[in-house]
Image 1 (cartoon, protein in one colour):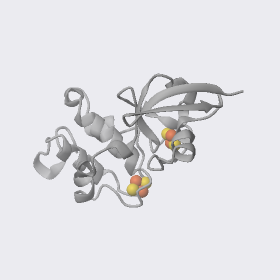
Image 2: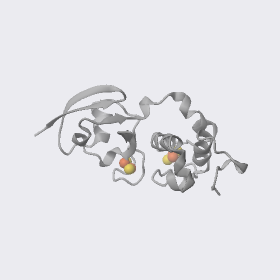
Image 3: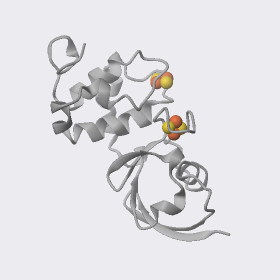
Length: 159
Ligand code: FES
Ligand code: FES
């Protein structure tokens, strides 16, 4: 059995049939060719698969595709490459496996600076794991993006 669904993907209408067990991550990567979204753990722990669902960051490995019916999905491919500048400049990417998810979360934080009144960048980025960078570059890139760079380049409240 498959389900007929329609949703908006990076500003364009998509219609397709989806198996009820199909993950949004697999739909994006293997059926729609958007391989920028990565799979790390496959179980909601690493954040490599982060996309926006109706404007909120979600782990696409945990989202059944049929549940995005009528929704707006945005992936790393929708971003302006200029937005990656701070991440390259601050050494926030090495192997790159985590980078699309990190960037998606970081830019969402950047669009919601009020969150920094109650949380540090590290706390807000806790759902995005990285095996390579040690996180300092990621934190610095986020801080740069939101214009919060303070002494030592760590932004408000960062060690
Ligand atoms: S692959 Fe989705 S959270 Fe790790
Ligand atoms: S850059 Fe390799 S996992 Fe983050």
